[in-house]
Length: 350
Image (cartoon, rainbow, N blue to C red):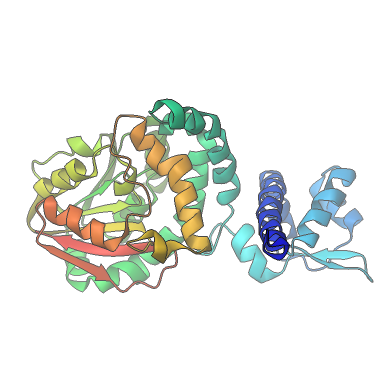
């Protein structure tokens, strides 16, 4: 046995353990609003933060110590003060920032809830359905994805499809399949009021949230329905269809893609957004790949297998994505040059 190799592995393992434990404290700070209270306030003492937030000083002291040791909050030992830098606040406090990551502090605990079910499924088959992940998963997904989608969808992503932007401005029928809490559909409806936007998702609680958001926004050109991707209405059809991190989760990806192909009107196109991944395991042997496979094991793949699905998984890569689309009847498959560390964007058409 090479003890130096063992020591290096122990170090990496404890780094992972540290991150998992710290994220739990980040979740507490997020739920209590501590990050928002620290944002923009500069250096503050423990007493000042306790007075401002109303949080119990002893808990606050330990939470701030954790965040300081983890490099999230900056501690000045001489002045005995704590500061949340604006660059960090953009990631953990500012939910209008496209760099906001706070939703992960809800998603990861929700993933851990699936561990017993996934372990059981490893032995006996099946999986953990989305309904068992709870509200934290719905909230976490929405909070993680919404800021970037609201800001970048119409400013950065769609401008790479100028012909479609022109049609959206004139007015067409749009469907967002697997719309979740409705951020992408609502963003499209508000940006292109002449277009008619429909959001479809199998999860009723997510659709209810989407409907509330649409009502609050006064988006009269937007509707949401509880509809499975395999039951997407094909008449009168759609000119533009989108899916955001959906296809790899579904029970039968080929059937859903076929349904999307059948629902597209002549001249229509489909925007498919999926996790960034290489085509082989060898291409994904890095931290981002580890996260993608872990998310797939504890969430994406298992919810498909829970319903007897194919369990495609999140790291399916562009080669298989293209093959699935062609097998579903699409003739055109183009990867858009979107600089995004998390997702790959594909323009797909008949």
